[in-house]
Image: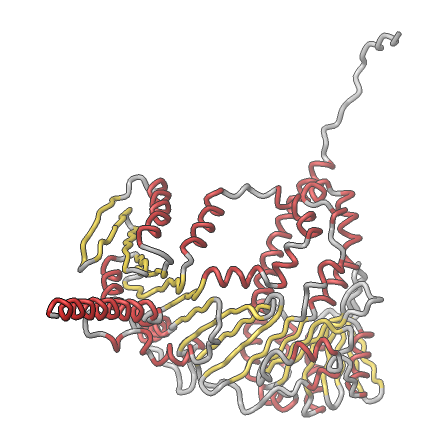
Length: 592
């Protein structure tokens, strides 16, 4: 009987020990990444689930477009001209998938004496030994690249730290199952281990308890794929120190934008094939009590591919615009400062909502672009417009009036693309465009109250994806834009390939995918910004988001510049072939 009681007691103790170990391990492994970092962390990037994020990417519209057979066939030649990637990249991706990393993060914890210190890590699947077999290969690759680096092992508590030093670079790594940690400073790594193991008495000094961070994550969606957080305090402190050095102090209510920011955060997720970005900037509200009403949408039609509306008080920027114009030598804006046009006049003449539209009818080779401002004082708006026109010295502007609307049209020199800048001013709106026909047509739509764009089902569906904006809204119909670009640029590309060898050597224009293959994967890009309690929230949804499209345009522009330079070199080489001077030679013998 006594043996049975002892056996039961031993089993109870073992069960309790197992439960306690499991409970502590789960508590540590499920702790948020922010609980592992110091409260004054400057930057954090976090990916909750690598494999899930990769799966979301593979189901996205843009990836499905990339995997289209016609697109793959077209890309085979240009991609074949690129350097062959090393096998290490594909192998590393497979190894990362094997580890199934969760809560991967990298953080900038300090910049002391311009020496940035980073920490990072991730939770791995399986045992430490299985993870080490993969990570050991990464260390071997690093060793091959830094053969002179100093390597040593340190003991800290119950952890073994591997240290690689190749001045000025240092990398310290260790395990705290199920975590793998790395840092560029041993002290930072030890502090990270202390927080992970709940040592010390600094639980309140972690990022998770920081007020600015908690405000930032309150605007973060629960199912994000990637998240970043930035604390700009260190930069605003440096700006303040620079001011103190020159004995300059801002007046109350003024200061740089960075000094007004409490935090910056952003996240990305995949949503039914689309990419959804959310950005948050914690700061006081800048503009007055005014909201977007998107009244200029009446200028849009069913062939409008671009619409933007933003609250922008240009009256408060007059002095800055004049300074920029003087620096650039532009006399049009300088005219505002030399014709008794004040910032108060501008604020009285025009409303805050600046809008822009892009219309591209199927019958036109190129789009028409418009910029609009609401008019609140017709007399002052006309005075400012006259000042702009008179300030354009050396140019000829023609003035006409139709149905109470004044039109100012600049006579431009003939060129391949006809551009005749035109400004129209009514008692309700100012419209500026690149040709008089599109401006006059837009003014007619404004006066008639047309609702072509707002009645479009494509626009309505896209608009409902985001909350109502208060100070910024943008819409791009990517399918319409691509179809128009394809119709206009495809003949030019075919001609360039026929006459420029460099183009033919880079792409096979006969395999250019049809417009239908591309546009079936394209949906509108819509972006909305609002002020929400403690900061600005900007959201964007689409096959790619608004900021991603801006980055893509910058990359494509740089590639286009490189291609033009290469093509120019090809044309030069083609047109400067060595000249063969005929010389007297013996006549060849007749062929039998």
